[in-house]
Length: 221
Image (cartoon, rainbow, N blue to C red; front, side, top):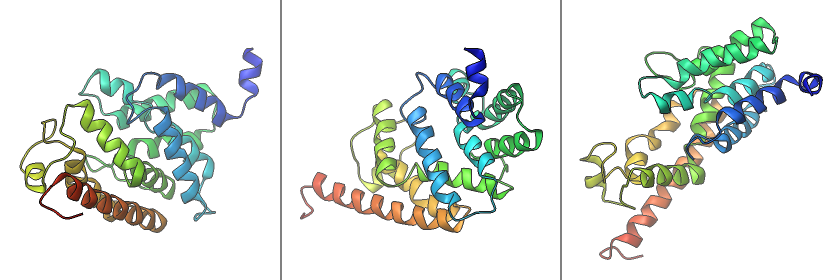
């Protein structure tokens, strides 16, 4: 059995480890999310034939591996911890040190917080691939999933959304869109990432405009 495992490609071995670690993760950052990010990464890679595709694929797989520890202890940054875990996993699988370094850097900066910006093409692709999953139809679904988890309303007005804080009853999917998600296209790091993000953000705008109309009896449909 052990020989069979070691004979598998590195990507598949890492995928099995990550899937097991994400068992029981919340619906916004579970194995399904990781798979979608990997799909986004593949789509972006098509525009960058000179990128280290293996590093991108591995980093996309590993980008949220620190989420369970962040959930258990809110003081943990899943990106920083995930980079440490990624290094441990890849080193244990005897991955090439240079490959490990590229993957770890991409995992560490995929959140782009505290000045930790993606500093390589591979890291930028992973960053964009992750952010794309917060936009479009999937992004709408994730926003409602998060809002429902915290007991927020189905929908509210722009004023109600913007005048109230996070984790309140007014922290709706609409508030997430207004405060954060609609701004993502300008934050994307690659040209194809920006293009896809703008398209998906426009879909979200149209959706929330329609939701406004359906939930406000004063507005004609």
